[in-house]
Length: 278
Image (cartoon, rainbow, N blue to C red; front, side, top):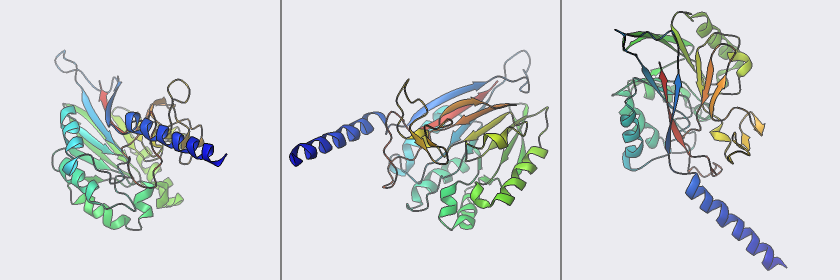
C-alpha cells in the first residue's frame, strides 16, 4: 500500500514542479492605463507619464548581473520607477538586489519604500543608506514634487508597518496632508491590505506588493490566488487594479521566485508593472 502512496506523492510533486517551471518562473510585463484630467494635453497632443513598479525582488537574480530585468526596464522607457519594498531580502545575499538598484538609480528617477523583509533583516538603516548611495530617494512619510513631461506629479511613500504603528500612522498622515488635489498624487506602500487606511485620504493612486500574487492562482477560479501574507486564505488584493474611494490601488505580483522558503508560484508569473497616466 505504501508504494502507491509514495508514487502518488512523487507524481504530485512532479506535477507541481513542472507547472511551476511552465507557468510560474518567467517574468512578464503588465500595463495599466489611468486617465486623469490632472495630466494636461500639450498643444493638442496627448501627454503621458509612465511609472514603472518593481516590488518583492527578495534579492532574486534574473540572468547574469540582472541583465533580464535591466533590458525589460529599458524597453519600457519609464519616466519614474517606484520600488514597493522587499527589494532586499533578510536572508539571501544582497548582491542580486544591488546589481539592479545601482543600475536603475543611476539611470532613472527612482523612489523606494521599505518592506517587511528589510525590517526582518535587522539592518534597515544600513539597507536604506546603501539604497541612497545608489542615487535612489528613500521615502519615509515624505512627498516629492516632480515635473515630468510638462506635468506636475507628487510621489509619496511610507515605511512598512514594521516601523511601528505610531510612526506608520504619522507617515501616512503626513503624506495625506501633503496632497494637492490639483496634482496627481501617488502613494508607494508595501502593503495592499490596508484599504481602510488608504480610503481615508485622497490619493489618486496607491501602489503595493507584498501579496506575491496569492502564490497559487488559477484563472477564472482563483484569480487572486490561494493565500497572501496578512490576508490569509482566499485574499482579495493580490494583483491588478482595484478601486479606492478616491482613486485606484495597483498591486504587483512581485519578482520573488527562487528563495528556499518561498512557496513555488503556479499560474502566477513574477512581473514588473507599467502604469501610464494620461
